[in-house]
Figure 1 (cartoon, rainbow, N blue to C red):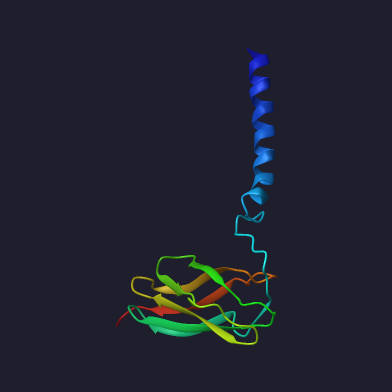
Figure 2: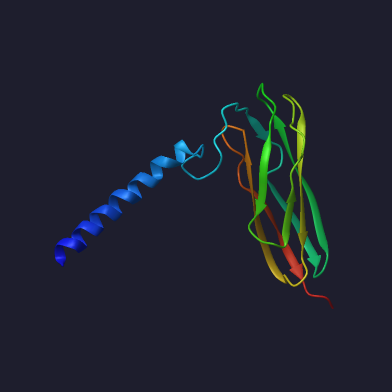
Length: 143
């Protein structure tokens, strides 16, 4: 019985080590994001936005700005937020070299009274990758 348990543990260990290596074969980076061969570079003009104080129920809209500083078009494949109350809208068209792009984010403060700290994650062909975008502020209750 102990022999079979040892065999199962060793097999499980070997299998788990192999999973990390197969991500490269699937076209994914180690962190699971897509691997792009035609990379470009960016500079973030805005990566943090503090919207100050808003009343419960108000919507906060902000456009994060970035510039394609590389020599290939910048393609944003996805943009996600840490919470369903925050919706990022990525540009649908590639951003040409030298151009400035915008990532629109809408935060719905309804039912979110208190301090707000939301994070937005962007997957693109930029190397190094987009930094984490941050949206902060305070949501006050209706009087």
